[in-house]
Amino acid sequence: MVDTGLPTRELGQTGMPVTRLGYGAVEIRWARPEARRVTDTFAGELLNAVLDAGINFIDTSPDYGNSEEMIGRWLAGRRSEYFLATKAGCPVTVPAGGNDRAGHAYTAENINAAVEQSLRRMRTDYLDLVQFHGAPSKANLAEHGGLDALRALKTSGKVRFIGASAFGANLRPLVDLGVFDAFQIPYSLLQRAHETDISQARRGGAGTVIRGGAARGITSEEKQWSVTSLPVSEEASRSTWERARLDELLDGATRMAFTLRYTLSHPDMDTAIVGTSQIAHLHDNIAVLRQGPLPADVYAEAKRRLDAAGNPAADDQG
Ligand SMILES: NC(=O)c1ccc[n+]([C@@H]2O[C@H](COP(=O)([O-])OP(=O)(O)OC[C@H]3O[C@@H](n4cnc5c(N)ncnc54)[C@H](OP(=O)(O)O)[C@@H]3O)[C@@H](O)[C@H]2O)c1
Image (cartoon, rainbow, N blue to C red):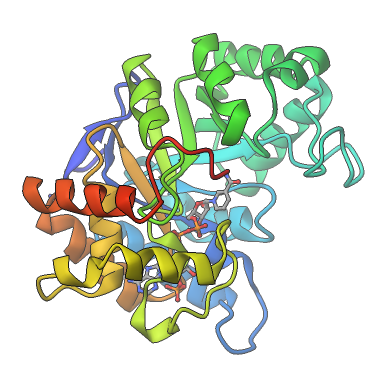
């Protein structure tokens, strides 16, 4: 892996030095030319810009439309420059509906088929990290044979490390299993439910991949609080920000930059896979990364204010 000058950290105990800012490739799933959609050609520009900027960790999923195909088409020739994380459990051999609420299925057949499909789509003979998608329960993984199947794929070398995307009540039991190399966990200053779980996972030896670390763009001035896909409502998020009087801590930063820097300041987070469909945003986010963590007193004060505003770390906010 080329040293690109961005801060890196070993993902858990995998030996993979991942950049603290990764790229979440859900945003390139669109291939339609309408406004704010990413064409195939632009997906190539964006993906190459990610690597050119020094990011070495890309997260995708069979669930993200043509994201895997775009990675294969545009980045297969640069395969040694990035760690590739994808997911399994998404519908491949099963009709959408699967065996959990999110329409996923954790059967050996479906897991094996997902990995073969990802290898083919991304034009590679190994996947660095395959994570169970859809936050399955421990019982679901055991009952349907998915965990054994993924572990066998690791033994075969097609998959180097295994992980789980998890949240809510399903996260801790999977951490406690002690078999996963990494966890993908939703987290930001507006979604602090797993602030301590991140540390717990890291203490257990697992890597921590943070999603939603840019709070899905909700604090971006340009979006004017118009993003509605946050698990907590837009109104609740705005109200939390205002009650915590976080504007007083910005010190010239944008709300968006402060939000991302807060995520990157978590001492036990290895990489934050921020998604973007805009090269300018990619560079803005890298500039935030280069600033390093928030000053300790500002970080502590932000936490104190968020606690007082009713957004504490340990509440189960999903
Ligand atoms: N495991 C799962 O179930 C799961 C679920 C969701 C996502 N994910 C993964 O996690 C990644 C990130 O999660 P996410 O997309 O939910 O959350 P996120 O990274 O917090 O937010 C992405 C959003 O933030 C905006 N954004 C990024 N940088 C910005 C900037 N500098 N200024 C203004 N807006 C900015 C992007 O809009 P622009 O395109 O306009 O920049 C995009 O809409 C995904 O790409 C995907 O790989 C996993």
